[in-house]
Length: 390
Figure 1 (cartoon, rainbow, N blue to C red):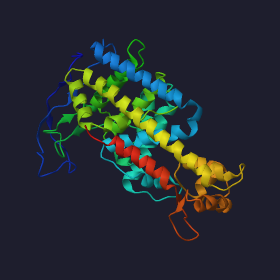
Figure 2 (spheres, rainbow, N blue to C red):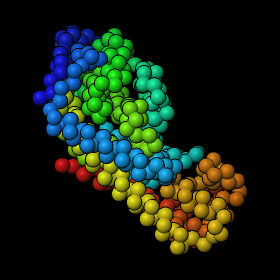
Figure 3 (cartoon, helix red, strand yellow):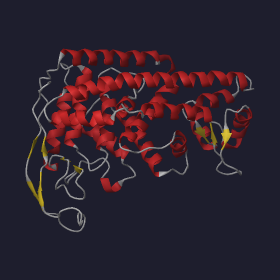
Figure 4 (cartoon, one colour):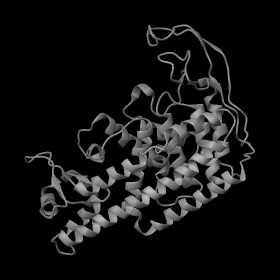
């Protein structure tokens, strides 16, 4: 066992005010038990040698994967980041097809609820990478703000000022887990940041423990899991394991969410080894899946060379390149991404439609949308591989 201070629990009387927590199914009064998170800033992380060896091997795989894609960062960095956000959302039972997500990202597009939330998670991941030079409370709040921008009742970008719990219904009485009191959040987050900034701890174990500590602190009323996994991406970049692309680590965690949640519980019980092991295993699985996705997209793009009829200097090829990272397009998107005037968009979309690369999904002169079935199928296949259990 990799021992560390166990999380302890207080006893607090629950006496809610107003109607918010009124429920016949849940007791209105009683005692609940908020967590008292152990401080970890100076933690001596003592892990079994086998756990450390696996973490070191996984870390090497991350840097190798990042280096492999160095020459082709533009298309694959975007695709992998979106794939990570979709997998992280799926851990929270937020699922949507690749087509629904891509349509939700279109300028002026109408989004289904889950797809809209996954797009917001992509924004949180982007914020995490952009702010990775300095990991502090402001960066964490910015990630949450991007994630919850359409959820004002959850105070985007602000730490909670009320209890938060998992399970147990509409009150914390009988909940599976209750986060620490909101009054201690600034100190707890500060302690976590001090731990994250250390340079004397093996990197992947440090990231795994930092993530588990964040989930124990549970600093927001909602979005803690997704923000915590965005923080993982920020730390991977901050520590130099990734420099150019996003490793879809959540896609590895998604393969066995039961083991992931059990590892978080073990961490609170004083054993850090399971969460480190889970991160190492998830890394290897996610990279294998990511490599398959990249290979599929390369193959698709190569086959298009044989069916597209256009001059070598035509913007048709630029649109084809765009499709590997934005598989659903409209005229507004082409103007934003490629500088193609919307009135000229059909000149470059029609040859791709004639070649079977694109399919138009709407009729009429307005709100015309085109999609690449092959790219969307590759993204859905990635999600299906990630979702396998066991």
